[in-house]
Length: 501
Ligand code: NAD
Image (spheres, rainbow, N blue to C red):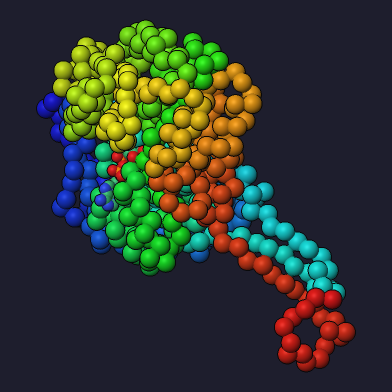
């Protein structure tokens, strides 16, 4: 395997693979083996401009394609995706490292947004008011923006782009997608699938790259909107730069998700949930639980149950039936490990130590096993920072109010969960907590496609969440038409402000 020539991964512009001319590349690795399997092109400004030019040229034709024809393409894309999703899952596992089941789950959740977007004729219906004023009718329409850009993170190379592009395309926009340079191939596979589904060339383009590509998309005057997902500092930068350039921007950032367990909760259910949500996808999910808040003396019992379950997990190559795969890069693995060391140094108790893991995989894979830290306090970096790895920190508080305060004073507000059998407590929590997505006895409360996905505070910059009706709104502009057909009774001059009668 080590002597294979790395594959060159470049762009998709105007309906075809296009080679890169920038001369800049970055390595793509298989995290389970540590082997460099590809070299991804890093686009120059000119290459980004070529992708935007293709999207700009395709826009008038796609905008004017009937809703019946546009939704027919969406239905075909959905059928192809559904039939061939194992291929996409295998690509994800080979570059991201998550286990195959999890990769399939990611594709299925993205597919749900495609299914939502198949209903675009209904979603774009406007309002009509007959005789709003005497013999005057009013109606509203929503129209596409033009070429739109999507910039996605490494952790969901298929699902996160699919939070946006099905709705964008269905609404009549054209797209330039800039995937993460760590796992760039899923985007190209989806571009090819669009072509097979009958999408006209130039409607969906992929440009590989880094900050150079992002900066060009942010400043390019033909790009009408930016949908960004990534870490909070970059999300803030993208939001500020994009809006300064006059664009509509939704920039989803990082997270620190708390799961609160009240004394009356079913502790077995809570322990299962904490393990699934803490260690699924090696903790590299923006909705992962990273802080477990044990309320009113349940800490010892809960930690014991979580530890028992964690010891049964198998870390290994995602193609071999492991529960949890490697981390995405060696550098990221080392960074996560350094947080565990810092937590231990600061006085946290390492109950399960992922540094000692014996993985079912190649020695050079980027392994770190599930790690459980108890007695974590709010001053420790393991609590204050988004770690984005398989590290679950347990904090203990005496009361519900203290748990709520912990969450509401945290700078992030992506997801949170409460475990309880008390309906009154649950109702109070969902009302009082300052977080965008809330689970009640549900640890990873990712909204369905027909609701909208998005956090509060430093977890989202902008005012539109992804998919659902907010997604449709983001990718369209409203127009209101007031019309009157010839009627002699309305003749005559009147320079006053129009009033209704
Ligand atoms: P990242 O911020 O490093 O990269 C995200 C995108 O920004 C990539 O396409 C990358 O190429 C680009 N980028 C990187 N550095 C840049 C720079 N200096 N200037 C401009 N663009 C730059 O994030 P990541 O490591 O790929 O993904 C993990 C992060 O994404 C975590 O913080 C996670 O919480 C977050 N995330 C959030 C959500 C959400 O819904 N809020 C969902 C998924 C991931």
